[in-house]
Length: 98
Image (cartoon, rainbow, N blue to C red):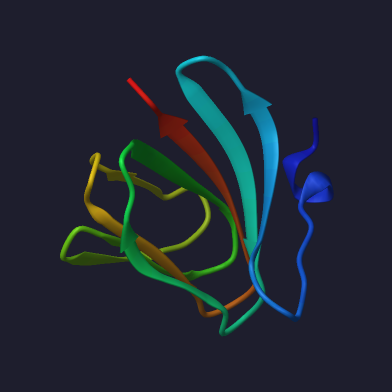
C-alpha cells in the first residue's frame, strides 16, 4: 500500500483513516493540512507516530517535539498527545492497547 496515496486530507479539519485493526492494536493514517491541530489530550493507550510527510509539532506528555519526515514519537498510555501541522502532514499512528 502506498501510504501517501492512501492519505485523505481536508481543509475542514484533520482526517484519520483506519488501516488495520487487531485485538491489541490499531494502525491509522492521519492527515492535517497546514495550520490544523489536534489539541493535546490524554488517551488510555500508548501510541507511536511516524511522520511520513510534512513538518510540525507532536506533543507527548509535556514535551513538544518538532518533527519532519521519518521522525518517530512515542507517547505512553494516559499521557497527553497532540499534533500541530506547519506544512501538510501525513502520519502513521500505531496504537498499542496492551
